[in-house]
Amino acid sequence: MKLHPEDLLSFLAVAEEGGVASASERLHRSQPTISGRLQRLQNAVGEPLYLRAGRGIRLSPSGEALLPLLRTLRGNLQQIEDWVSRRQQQQEGQLRIAASSTVANYFLMEHLARFRSAYPGIELRLQTGALALEDWDWNDWDLLFTEEAIAPEQLPNDLQQSPWREDELVAILPLQHPWVVAGKQSATWAEILREPIVWREPHSGIRRRVAAALRAAGLKPSYTVEVTGVEALREAVAAGLGIGFASVEALDKVRWPLASLRLEPPQGLFWTLYLVHPQVEHASHALRAFLDLLLPLDGAQRQASSASNTQAP
Image (cartoon, rainbow, N blue to C red; front, side):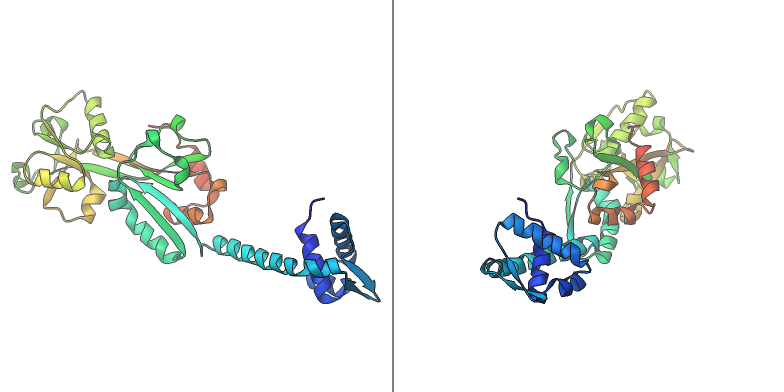
């Protein structure tokens, strides 16, 4: 017969209090409830654990032998309750985040710093760099930041995708470039493509967004240079190898010796950053706290927003 923790702890209380009446007061349960638990436990054990002694009880040898095990059980349960409480109050836990280098370097760190300040007991694990989603193990991460939407069929059913923020993309070029010297503030695609282009690596979200805009306009660069990483892009553009592309928010956070031009005025070129995470009901306490910081919406609003934004653009 299966043993029930409440029966075991009720027996422990009765043994320590010396009777059912005192144990019922301690446990805030009725005497018939406590007596029923004792009887169920004795039936499960199959031998007497206690004997009646006046208005109290006296433990049998079996009951005496069980007592130290029950005290250990009570201590273990208290440790579990303390652990749950720490998790619920975000005093303990882990948050596993993956993000592209651009998102991590220019968009994410300030939010992680705020979260760390508010919840110092949460361990942060951050992976940055190229995200090879075709081989991605979704179970290894609580939150994924991407530079473009992921097709819904690539996502497991228990994950949701939300647009996080929108930013404008601009052309970057050396300070000594004739356009900068002449005070030019923007450029059309036709003007841009008369210059050599410096691309980031193929998996770069900025590169893919610019390339999609060029395809939509029926245009293709005639001469290009390809580099890997943000720093290499900066150095290549500064050296005069060609015009590159970067986000306005990223440029606001760095002091590059470069100038920027708006693309395709007056509307400009924009991109959207996305985040992927478990459905709210499947999220850890730590993840919920971070999402509250990152997306200041109530739970119903967040779920409605996520449900309406799971289609790739």
